[in-house]
Image (cartoon, rainbow, N blue to C red; front, top):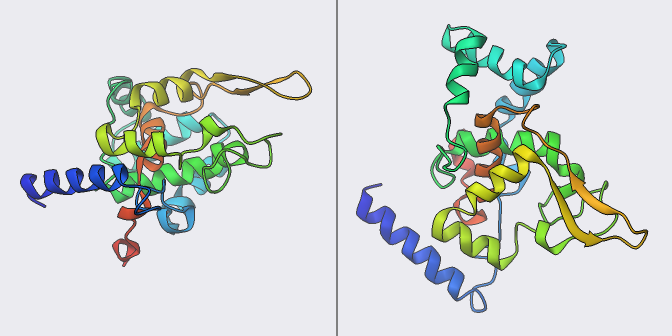
Length: 206
């Protein structure tokens, strides 16, 4: 796709989101896991974390090193140089990043955020509207600047406690994943959240 066509496409999506009352679902949210996940990515990730007894982050660096013919330390150093404010992946074009992020979402996020990313998985006592990645605000932001990458990265990396008080007086806290996932993996997860049903393309796996 040439730059002009890509710009026209983004403008079209913004206008579609602005007219969401007329075209509901055009900006409905992340691709369904069943569409986003390429089986080979899920199988590879589950295999590598099952084979290693160390942290998932170290397992990821070992997997990358094996594929690149390098070593885990080199991959860890490269990961530490990735930005914490700018996603290196394009959720609208990089289907592999979206797929790998969807695998990570399924493993680490789905229990709370739900299989449909609407904010109520089996581990959540109540649905929290701000956790709904299909909400208009999040989808409109995704069309303008691909979501809120700085805030999303920070919350996944450092953890986050909701201000909403449950009926029993407790609060909902998301654990920090900075010691569990590499920066690249966090960005891949964000890429999945930034992806839109509109851009799902099952033919990519053929």
